[in-house]
Length: 386
Image (cartoon, rainbow, N blue to C red; front, side):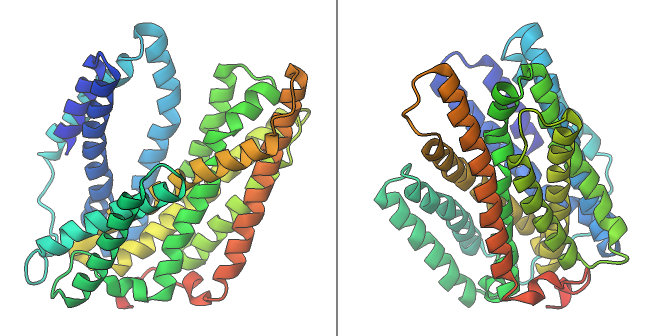
């Protein structure tokens, strides 16, 4: 998987046409997805069940560091050597990781019970892709035929999984209402939080008047907040269980989403930075706590599937956020403004409305989850017993 990622990065840097670049990005995406999916499984296997939250926290912290450093380093690479440098400069990293992994001790991972159900595995992949395709149809980017095939794949996985002796992903887990609500919460929080990357740059540059560089620094703060949130989770589990931590992270994002929407052009920079940083901290707390629950719910031999499930839920949330938030922003900004000043004022009003309305929507979702209160009472060791 690291070799696939490296090859994809080199291919991206050598691309001379858009189709070549897109094809290379697909290859790179496959390698990156394999790495992200296996990451939680490897981390928990290295640390053992007793250190599950700690290892998942460390895994999330490393991702947050990379996400925070990426825009800054990427901008420097583009300034120095042009856009291909963003890709070829990263190729040595997965190759180095591949070499270092050879020094790791073999993981004591439990083998699948009754062997691998390849049919169920393929249906899981199709069902997860189908969930995204169904969303694409709702957003107008997929055809009715694609949406129909996606629905068939989801139904086929559900039916076959209930008959399989050793399914890769057992549909029975989703008959646990709390487990389903938790995964829906992952979609919801990522849908709302994506507004920071999608719309906040407009606010920082056009409303506050920051330079692109300074705006990039502010936009890195949510990732540093995620780093802090991920670090906090295993340290807070002595007084709070994983479910309550996930709930606290969800509520924090809803509150800070509204706080960002309430910012004004004259707001102190310290207040702006705090709002963005705390927003990321809430997201980091939720992600690690939710990952702890999901990985603990699935059997040991399905930890890779647990990682994939988390990625798919986050991706669905981000894709949905890109469509929903952009549509809301465009609707609120209107098309009547003709002058530059009027357009800026309309954009500022749309920015504030988008953040406040999405905050309220997440708050309503949170209140709805309280109909299943056990969702937020998972203990770190409860998941394996449910």
